[in-house]
Amino acid sequence: MTRSNDINTFLIVDDSITARMIIKQCIAIAGFRDRAFIEARNGEEAWQILQHVKVDMIITDLNMPVLDGRMLLERIKTTPAVSSTQVIVVTSTANPAQEAELIGLGASAVMGKPVSPAEVYRTLADVNRNGRERKND
Amino acid sequence: MITVVADLAFIELEEQRQDAQVTVPAHFWKMRLPVVHPLEGDLLLAAEPDLLQEITRNIYGLDAEQPTSDHELDTLAELLNTIGGSLMRVIVPSTVKYELGLPVVPGNGGKSEAPGLSFVFCSEERRLIFSIVGQNLISEVMK
Amino acid sequence: MNLIVIGIGELKVANTPGSVLRTFALGSCIGVALVAPRLQAAGLLHFALPDSSINQELALERPGYFADTGIPVLIKKMFDYGCQYTDLIVKIAGGANIMDPEETFRIGSRNTLAVKKHLWRYKLGAVAEDVGDHISRTMSVVVDTGRVIITSPGNGRWEL
Figure 1 (tube, chains in turn green, cyan, purple):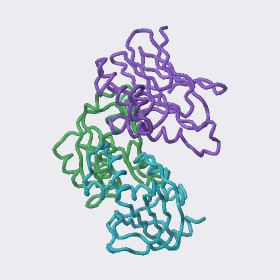
Figure 2 (cartoon, one colour; figure 1 turned 135 degrees about the vertical axis):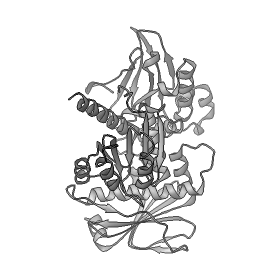
Figure 3 (cartoon, helix red, strand yellow; figure 1 turned 45 degrees about the vertical axis):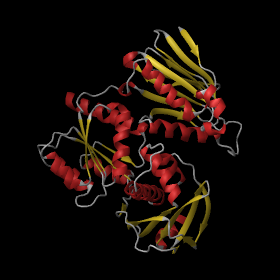
């Protein structure tokens, strides 16, 4: 995969420390080992981080306490300062109906748990490629 | 269930039996996950401590190091969340969204009869018991 | 082309331009390719069994025979050739359940779980895999580019 120099900081949002660790390791394996990783336990923590830190890509769970992933996605995509940030949803409730709704809300991709390094590698490559195509339009 | 544990923890489980009456020993770690929509019910996962420790160690990539009990509990919750999602993906039509609650430690700490329908899985004689509660949910699973 | 053949239980690393690492007859065995395109280096391991505890003498003589001993040795050899973790890309192939149509022994499946477990322990993982089924595979790694090619009798040739 051609490594994107545009993605320097990832924000991983999940109430499970185990899930955050798995996702982070998969992203590292996919070619981003030397990038910065920030973690948040729910959508509200993630939102507060976004007020102060420039993040290039957000990987979020859906089902979380305080503020869930859907509401986080809606907030991000309706706030001009951060709306261009790529958001990938990783959820145990992924199916075609869920994916269609989340893509409609602005998610760049949706992955179902459990994720594998190979799947994360392919998804990040697709998202990168689509992102570059949109920039060139 | 077998696929999820293999994918996450690199452990091969064998299905031992399926029963409406399974006793869950008091010392097993337990977790409950509500199923919210479009079906209602609960999913429960009970793990023999040695097996949960090995699952946690494999997921965290630990060698001789012991995982902490916080990590073990979180692993059990995430495992149940993932198993629940995989199960729902099979029984709910792809055109319908489904919703799960947040995993919680169930209140009854002692030995108990697992409610609903239970599936017992084994790895090297250590057990993982997965139970489904809720008549509509059980009916869809048994179809 | 400088062809370097890896036999069962062997592992080799190369960084000579024009080299190809190749291993044949991956049935239940697994081929593990570690490639580092930036350094034009690559390594290939062909292991047969998941766990060295069944024969520790053999594991000492031939660490590549088992997943748990072969993988760390392969990683170390890549580091000896100047690679760092950020350079490494992993691809795996094999793990078929051959001559086991009832899948009684499932050595291929057990090998697949073992390779993923041990790679994960070393903070690695396969970004591409061609495992399972009931076919025999030959795996070739082009050292200059890191491309991995799989061929299988009667099934053709494809890139991983």
